[in-house]
Amino acid sequence: MFSKQFRYYSQSVIYKIKYMKTKTVIASLIVGLSILASCKEKVSVEISNPEKEVKPPETIIKSVLTAEEQALMSPEEIINRLQKGNENFVNNDLTQRDHSEQRRISAIGQYPKAIVLSCVDSRVPVEDVFDLGIGDVFVARVAGNIENEEIIGSMEFATVVAGSKVVIILGHTACGAVKHAIDNTDAFSLGLNSLQGLLNEIRPVVEMKEGEVPSSKDEDFTNHVIHQNVQKTIADIREKSPKMKEMEQNNTLKIIGAVYNMKTGEVEFLE
Ligand SMILES: [Zn+2]
Image 1: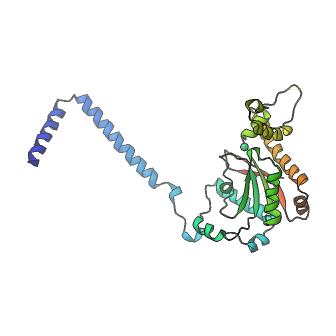
Image 2: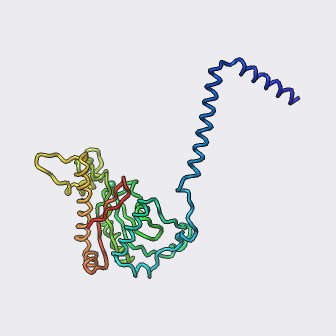
């Protein structure tokens, strides 16, 4: 029964092919062969992808920072490690970590080496940018990386109470908050009162030149304002936190500015 049906279908296919136009048959063959070729190409790309290389198990970090390790590191040493971590990020060579194990160990306490104040921008993944894992740093985020009482309070907690020795103010290229401050966007008229307050914090660093209207379309000028905004945040922190300023003078704390370049992944540390 089955063989009869199969013979019937085979004969009908042969009959159809026989009476198909030659051009149609050739076109079908070309399409079929190109699909096969593209499948083969895709497979070979996946096999040769270097990112899929698995690192040896002994290089996977399972530990977290301890109180002893935190106490032994100087601010300069911490900054050097963060710079090396950024090199790893730029080279797409991040340290592999056992997050489950790090989470389990760190549940009993934390001894982070630094606190980073970053913009909220989704394109600035702070821990990845410095190749860091669980328990390595405190991270505070606010659009335009400005300071306020709560942020400085968080920094005082991170440094004076929890022992971190470096404060990094991390600005970034193409920052939307800075661009709107440069262009003097009227957020208040849109009912965005709090956003207006935030832009007002950045606006004083936008230098006015006589006869010129500042514009975020000028990339060099925008980058200059981004740097100035980081420096303003640092000056404000020193002014509003006498304790952190004192620690800095005693060389037990370093407050440093930095700017993340979104195109290259590089962090420029400012002096
Ligand atoms: Zn930003």
